[in-house]
Length: 193
Ligand SMILES: [Zn+2]
Image (cartoon, rainbow, N blue to C red):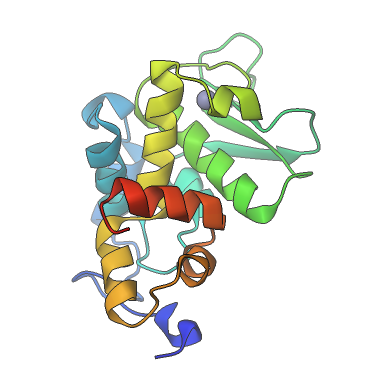
């Protein structure tokens, strides 16, 4: 199977073209991060179950929007920032993610997923994220990174792609829209390398 075909492969039971049902939309309006797990892996899986359209690469921007989070792309001197809905100075009335359009597409996707982690894991308004913050040992930053990895590269989907012959790190990185470094690191963490 070519990687083009694999991008539209149905994953799971829901069907590749499943539309958002009324029940799903209702659930989305009622989204409250307090109802999700505080454990990054399970929390990412819960978000995917509710908001993912089963297509690869995973559109974290659409997932954020479906969760009622505002996205603010702009050129900046840092990677990203999560601002809670009730944060002073946030006049949008909803949680907001700022991300840096000067960075690569795969970096922007990772940043959105990381900032969404701060939201889902209940961290509230978080420090501005730079490469240094991403790499820090701060527990909340580590949790947001783990959430991002599980959101962008779910284990079941990776195993399915590997079973279809996409075994190289570069090929998997391309399919999942992440950097080869992020994919390589995640494969090791999952015990697949
Ligand atoms: Zn962060």
